[in-house]
Image (cartoon, rainbow, N blue to C red):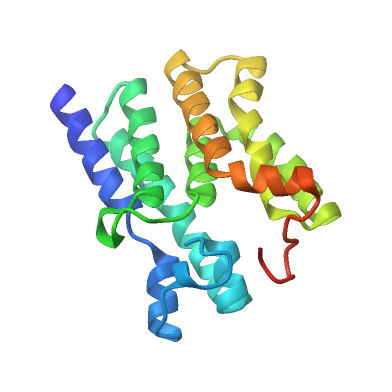
Length: 199
């Protein structure tokens, strides 16, 4: 069983490491998205560099990475901890992609997808809060940070395997760490709003 967990984690990492924002930007503009806009290889920066249409495509594909990674682990009939770790590996692949010099995005879309697959109700509740915050403030980073509450919501609702809660907490800490610069800018009041020039 351990061998199948390792295999699932490796496949999930390699899947997560596919950077659609990088691919789209290279294909459409012949540039490296990590050298433009905010420098982040994700959907929000794709919107800045390429526009809304390609950004939606990137968002959907980044979400699918997390969904497919968890589905693969379920197809292997892995235990709960193996499923959760596979989801984590997909996120790690997005953040540190082997194909692109280990310089990727923040993994928000893939993180949300993994959270949804592991704990759909807590994630949905947090997502509603995040959407409202983004709509009110236009701070995408603030909405993204709200998802660190997902494991807490899962624990409060109950009924989820402890492995899901623990791995989700690790993912939440990773999300928090990847947004440390955004947090500093939010505190200072100079964080970029969606639709404005990035900082």
